[in-house]
Image (cartoon, rainbow, N blue to C red; front, side, top):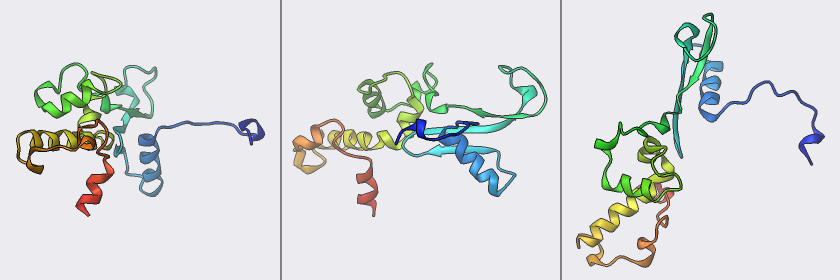
Length: 151
């Protein structure tokens, strides 16, 4: 089956954060914020058009997608970054970008835990100071393992 096999009019395309807010608004018209804290991290909110400088017109309201996972790219988070956060960023496919997301997003938490465990091993505080090859391997400690251990 091919997309050409369907006849449709696309009227909107939204990301997960905006879709979250819209779906909540369907049930409760007071909902004005959408937030995703999962694999990644983002937020959106409803704003009066008169306060939105990048769009023409002053009437009505619109959804502002903050893309706040990118917060920190100008150094705002530097004093809060731990050594583990810095290693995750430096070894990522996009160093210096999406810093806030890397600090709290589920996609990165497994690697942060692996780095903490490795430091504890290197300081002879865990596993008699002997790290397995698996623990030494970047990306080997999946985020899902944290939930499994906690359970």
